Amino acid sequence: MKAKPALFKRAGKALQKAAPTILTGIGTAGVVATAVLAVRATPKALKCIEREKEAKNVENSGNLTRMETIGACWRCYVPAAVTGIATIGCIFGANVLNRRQQASLVSAYALASRSLNRYKQKVKELYGEEAHRKVMAALAVEQSEKRPIYAGTFAATTSLGFEEADEEERLFYDAISSRYFQATISQVLQAEYHLNRNFALSGGFITLNDFYDFLGISKTPEGDKIGWMVSDGLYWVDFDHQRTVVDDGLNGEVECWIIDAPFPPVTYEEWEDMEI
Figure 1 (cartoon, rainbow, N blue to C red):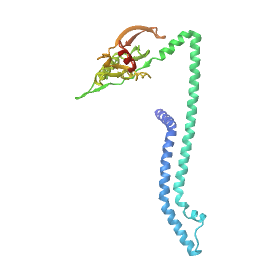
Figure 2 (spheres, rainbow, N blue to C red):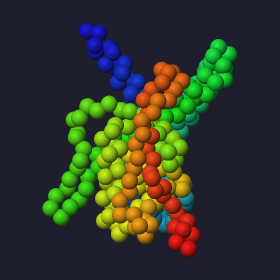
Figure 3 (cartoon, rainbow, N blue to C red):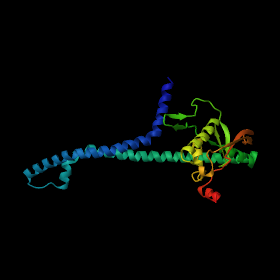
Figure 4 (tube, rainbow, N blue to C red):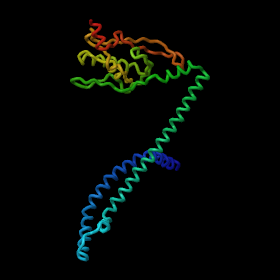
C-alpha cells in the first residue's frame, strides 16, 4: 500500500520539474489553435454581419456602425479568444516557473560554491597547502570515454574491441600534452593501431587530435596543427610505454604508464625548417 503514495510522489515531482516544458508545448499548440479557430470563425462572422445588414436595411436602410458590427459577430470569435487567453496564461506560467527554477539553481550553486570553498580552506588548515594541491591534481585526472572504434573495409566493418571485456582502468600520463587520464590498456593499444591505420590510408598525414579522439579524451587547441607526416621519413608512428609510480595525494604511490612518441608531432612549418 505504501508503494502507491511513493509512486504518486515521484510522479508529482517529475511533473513539477517538467511543468515549464509542458506549458511551453501547450502554449505553442495554443498559438496554432488560436489562428486556426480565428480563420474558421471568419466565414461565420461575415454571414452574421450580412444578416445584420439585411435586417437594418429593412428597418432603417442604413450601414452598420462599428459597435453594431462587433455586436453582430463577436460570438463567432469566442472559442478563438478563449484559446488565445489560455495560451497567454501558459506562456506566462512557463516563464514564472522557469524563473523559479533558475533561482533555485543559482541558490544551489551558491551553496555548493560556499561549501567547496570551506572544504578547500579546511584542507589547507588541517593538512597544508601541498595536500590541497595534491587533492586538486587527483580530481583533475581526465576520464576517457569508452567508445568502440570501427574500421570500414571493402568487405566488412571491423573492430578490435571486446564489448563485454571487464578490463581494469589504469592511470596514464600523456607526455606530449603533459596530462593524466584513465583508460584501459586495450583502449590505448586500439587508439595507437587506428592512428597508424588512418596514417597509412590518408596518404601519410595524421594530427595529434586524431590520436586523442581515438583515446576518448579531450582534444587540445594545438592538436589540429601538429601531427606526423610520411615526408618525415615515417611510415609508422611508434609509441613508447614506460611504467612508473606517482603519488596521487590520496592513496600514496600508484602505478602510472607514461605514453610518449620517439618522433614527436610537428607543425608543417617546423617540418619545412627541418628539411632546410
